[in-house]
Length: 399
Image 1: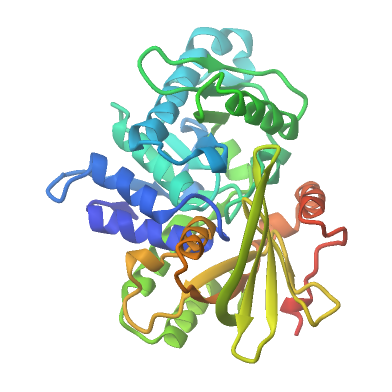
Image 2: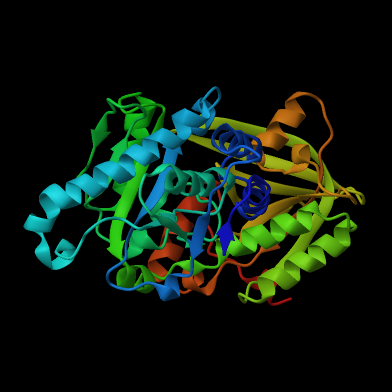
């Protein structure tokens, strides 16, 4: 698959926003990034590469951005994209100038990055690698897949974190005279904490570009990415743009994800009545409640992204990460840009006194994640921040 028009780019980002499970950055900001760099008549081609076609001669890295959610207001498109361009270039230079000689077994055949890997599905962390590929002055593509299958609050909830060394890593700021750091730590959890603290202190900018886990094509295949997530996001974006009634949109999304073995289930439909968050350790932590037409309350726990969901009149929890909790507007026409819902947009509308009517949809996590014991252990730790101390609950998919 390839992206050759601004409209296709935006369609992909709409679907990525839906799949992100509440986080991953707002569609409105991602759209602003695209419109800053790409005009209606811009000629370009961004290739989305099937990871199964890669070989040992291909080299890629996880390209992402990182910012404290509550401090992202006011960032320009350049603030968001330039740091990752710098990070990929800095990692490329580090490998060529140092690591090829220090570790010839791992990096001896490195020539140049020609692949970027999205860290997660979400409007911002999809637009960042795509726009980075667009801005780099050499032939580079983006993998049609990612390392989480949704947006996640911490790096240690990604597939590469359970398989790849922490070193080398690169975090950079924007600008020609950018600041950078590469940290030697024991785990990606430690790395996430360290970079969050550096960003929170403003030492490498409030928005930072990341280049992580450089891998050749064979290692990328063995890294157990969740495949086809960008092409699925594009297909879902097209569904959101059609004028079918909402129930037909949901059926179409279900058919789209069935090809990758992921089930979906509508948890509830209703009006958002409460949205409360506070910033704890640079994470936006809180909850959102939806009231259904029969006066039931469904409450979603949030740690940047959605983590768990439960009906208040039920004892057992309904859904837990890594399964996703996604939002779809109840619009029975083409869903307008102002209703491409994520946590940020819902919070903004609530603050203005506007009504938010949504379908809350659970999407089953990919088996790549569900079958990874290390990742599932990390998810259990993430639940604790959301004040849930139980295990992953798969009952939703058994009923």
